[in-house]
Picture (spheres, helix red, strand yellow):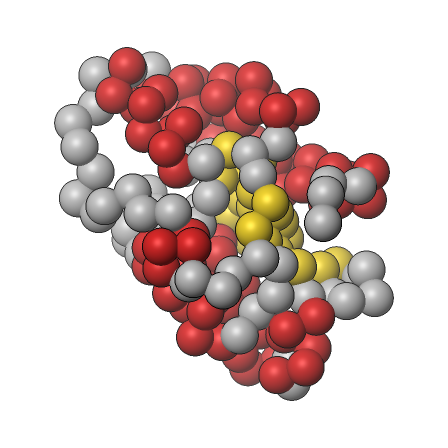
Length: 159
Ligand code: ZN
């Protein structure tokens, strides 16, 4: 499967949510859950500054989906996210049996940028989604959104 204009629209919403998080002083990550029929079901952004460092939007989506959707609905849904799932969120995605993931920038890209901006290593290994969930259907990175997402992270890093 490749990225469609519809995918790009949902992914742009995820990036808007990342920008909203940044405006609230939080790390710029945002995610959207879309049903198999194309309806937006749930969205969130990072609250790691506001709450604690496990408050990632992809984990919130997995928990919401586990409570509110049937296994079939979860499998048919797509998660759009501004940055690739971390291992914690990828595991949650796999445990609840959600479907396809489309991300704008990869964990590897983000890791390279953060190193260049002077950050030390992350406390959690930057595994790819497929290293955590081998059968996951994953699309990304999406070149059209790279510069915008990188700019959000750079603004957070330099704040
Ligand atoms: Zn995460």
